[in-house]
Length: 366
Image 1 (tube, rainbow, N blue to C red):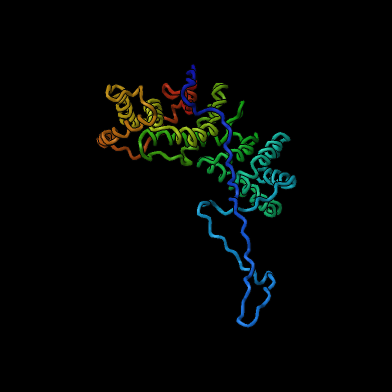
Image 2: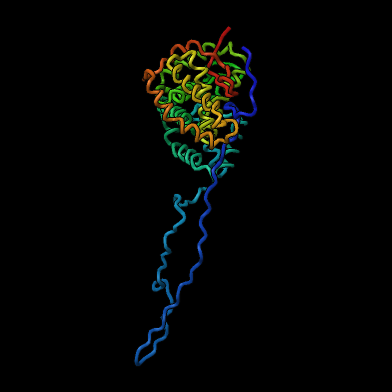
């Protein structure tokens, strides 16, 4: 099907972005203090010489606790050596049962070297993996397989929870052909299908204004089965968008969705509702309410929506929230959402309404 053009004025979800690196807080400067010399002891009849200062009789100075630094205690960062880099790369490859290519080894070493001092989570992952060496080396095939399954499963869940470091780590596992769900350029991976379920439920819950859909294993498996079966028929550019979905969706949730105002979020809910309501009937009523409210605000001459900035639009939406919620209460309350019909008819790479945000879960096979 013909794809819509992307409007550059609106932030798109599916775009590659770099990972933000935290900056370590430098230790607070302290003012050196002078140790006072012992005072002379004067007797009515005899003057004594001052007692020599020794470590035993020098008063102990206990500086007052800092009133400005409330962060975690500063700890020494162990040095990242060439041996540590090599050891981690070898052990991580063994846990994943993946033989890293020279290019992958270089990427691992470059990123660890770049982020070692600033990325505590990544540093802990390296040290914890190295600590597993005895278990990795001495474990039976079954034990090592269980260790791999646990590690990969934990990484996937951390990705869904918003951890971009976990996405980077599990990407090496997904890059191995034996772990692909379907071949292609690029291939289909489980992280893509898992994130598709996550994105779908997020959109549904935002449109409904409450938690009604959960990306459980049943939904993840249904989406994975559908996309795996149809992947060979999906256009090449759509496959590219699918492969970028995990990174792009995390970027969207961690940045645009958090940083943009209520007007941006409400317009996204309207776009999602317009596309999803054709396949999920439970969304139709509340989706219409959202469209009607925004249309009323834009048409009100006293508001002048088009001249407002983001903060002013947020205030206008908040003033209309009470009436909106009263209208929501008049609707039939949907406690769950039936997604099975959507899964059966989804079309990959159809744009979301007039938004440039690509939602690669709607699949139409001709």
